[in-house]
Amino acid sequence: MTPKLPLYFDYNATTPVDERVLEAMLPFFGEDFGNPSSRSHAFGWKAEAAVEVARQQVAELIGATPQEITWTAGATESNNLAIKGACEMYRDKGRHIITCSTEHRAVLDPCAALAKAGWQVTHLPVDEAGRVDPAKVEAAITDQTVLISIMAANNETGTLHPLAEIGRIAKQAGVLLHTDATQAAGKIPLAVESLGVALLSLSAHKLYGPKGVGCLYVRRRSPRVRLAKQMHGGSHERGLRSGTLNVPGIVGLGAAAEIAGNELTDDAERLVALRDRLDEGVRSQLPEVQLNGHPTERLCNTANLSFAYVEGEALMMKLSSLAVSSGSACMSASREPSHVLKAMGVPDALANAAIRFSLGRPTTVEEIDFAIGAIVQAVRELRAISPLYELAREGIDPTRLQ
Ligand SMILES: Cc1ncc(COP(=O)(O)O)c(C=O)c1O
Image 1 (cartoon, helix red, strand yellow):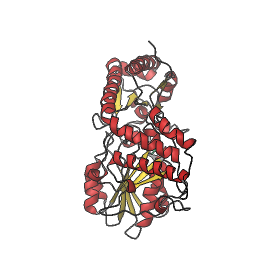
Image 2 (image 1 turned 60 degrees about the vertical axis):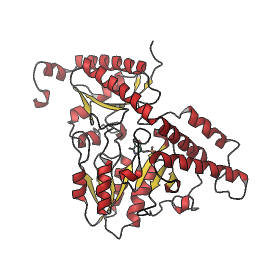
Image 3 (image 1 turned 90 degrees about the vertical axis):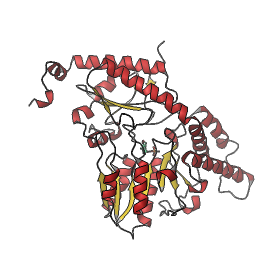
Image 4 (image 1 turned 180 degrees about the vertical axis):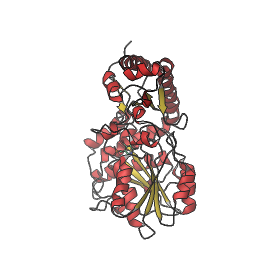
């Protein structure tokens, strides 16, 4: 039976709100509408209590204490607060930060803003699987280094960085480590202490919670981390992030975090099997398909595949029954190949032929099998009209042609 089309394979872009999450949120749009800052009546107390339950739920997902969680409007804000807040607070130590060339724009752009303000920013390279070498992190640290920001998992390829090793190096050098865990949260176990991170960003809409809400973990002990606030106002969130709290959103993030913590192992096992079924199903029927990302150190739900001799955008158009994203999707209007694939040394032709398939909790075997069929057919059709593919089949390397 054909599943209902179009099929969604873009869970790294966003996820649907889990029904259980929605149910937890609904009362806070209606009868429990109070403002948690209203300390003088029961409406406020009820909202505040719900926000504190959520803080506990999120803290548990990452092995933190509730006091270490600050609510934000999502990972972009969390990353800005972490990076700009730490640099402003500790600027007397020096003016150097270290990050990685494959980070999301929500990290690269705050770093670029700091560079404009006179900071030195080191962008570490990655290997062909997209991983940063901890030895390179160590070598890049100077006595001026205030912060290292390395993501836990890459949004385009799913590649996981050796974060615990980087955490040990950062701790030994007395440098703060921030991680953008937006894609990792809910997909792999995260324990802030064993990872050695001082700051961690996550976002509700990537783990079956609502859009527009996230949080920043800020370590409180050994040693306590302080940040310069980036939002001035009513001193909410212990003065770190002003603004009336998004109570339904926060309750949703809390519920989503609890569910993710409970179901992470089962979800991951199921998703790895589906992801590999897709990957193997496609590659067993089509030659010249390259996996972009680490073969094993990778998110359970992500397969980024390049189909040689095929234009990614043309393939996406043909695959209109599948919601996927191309190698350049993050750059919206620009057709520039993805900066992530470029940093991994993927040639432009293959980077432009990349499609990211990201699976999620609702993905089924039937959906995967339908997708395999659709992909194989679309690629065969496009290659049939590709002069480059014809040349390659005749043994001529088209990349060497003038
Ligand atoms: C790795 C990573 N960081 C940050 C973000 C931005 O998150 P938000 O949409 O919550 O601002 C995303 C979302 O695309 C992401 O994948």
